[in-house]
Length: 244
Length: 351
Image (cartoon, rainbow over all chains, first blue to last red; front, top):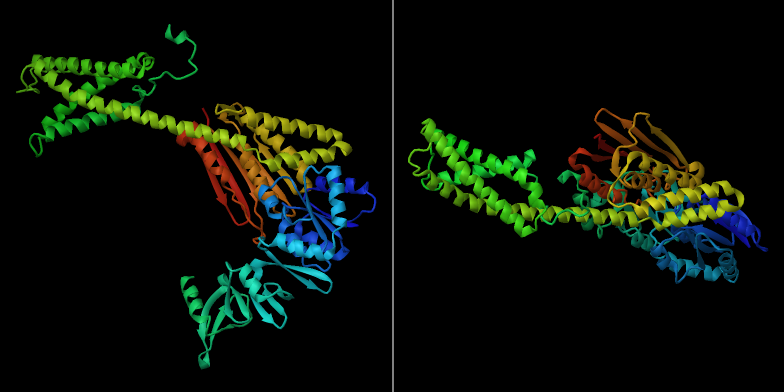
């Protein structure tokens, strides 16, 4: 089994690595110091199992797990945590397993056995259930075999295109395989629907302008050109812009 | 004789009496006397009573108030050892006797010297009785006020104590288990470091478990912070850089509340250093000034806005409350939050 260790504490990684080294049939394919590195390494090196710390910088373990669950095949995830009553409650029902630090050797062996029995298909459905309450702070796009993580705060708008959604952000644009409706639901606090095919970051809207023919466009910071507002979404948007 | 007695563990039951020797209390008693005087003067005939009448009666009333204050100040030690009812009666009796005697003396002086300040007041004993009657009502009101205020203060103090206790009991479980994990990792490969970590952790827990609301001192608190940082340094490795600048002139014996600094430093590590993948420098600068000691704790802030931010100021209110409890307005905690840095400054009075 190809195992990736993700923990921001070097000594915690060292200890897990030392324990795993004694276990036959396991191979450590990498060590990550934060959530972002964890999903990048997992994609690059094709891990079957990720031992994931929960409290990590950049991207915490719960969010990293959610991104990992979209991989194909999705690696099994075992959470490692010092103590977190809430997080425990959140994934107790659905995680492959979770380990409490300091991790005991016998517990680690048992968790590895569970992970081994775990098929990719189940991993996906389980991770999705577990990750449900986790609101992402980043979007993860696959680019030519690599991964691109876009912080949500950098996103100007989402534009639906066929079966993809184009994400326009400060560093350019990427495509993600998600539905606009799900994005709208997840990020309702920060994004607003201005058209059937478009979600815009609320705090980037700088104004509305009426063009010839009565069509209304929103000017959005970070967008190369104004974005059309549909008749249906106009009244709500007017109110929102006024309140800003 | 009294001074040689050992200090009592518990305050006397009637320690609700304020310290009458205190200038603040004296001032409020003087103000109270003046208010009563004005009420009495204006009540019978509305209108301006005339400046000279106001001046002479003020002189008279303030003289009485001063006498009562001095008497209560002298008697407070004895009164404080009595049961509540007895001390009320005692204080009441003292004030009445002083008012009566003070009035007799004032009227006698006035008439002997022929100043004519008390014309038409009738017999001196009559005047004294009137003054005692008004004085009795005012004193009853004032004593009730002091009692209620003392109760309220006691409650506030108890609350602060409770909060200290709660804070001390709240050793973050994360910290304990992460430290244990660190030690478990070190035992096999670096036993000497593991040993030191166990010692540091023990010091921290000993302080957290045993500290009551009595004062610790700055030296002890700084050492505690060093123990704490030693553990975090093992845990976070290269990511935690420490800039420790405690000047040679900083008085280590300066009394400060127990576990005052460690929570601030813990906040700085938890919310400042740990969320940044590359880590950063935590700086602690302690500086002695002529009449205060300034301790500044600074940490970088996470430049990545996408990451969930946790409340930084959970501990601040509690630190402020404890400073207020021990030092009143003379100690402060200032918090400055810039986009890239976070700064806590504790200012403590010297002596």
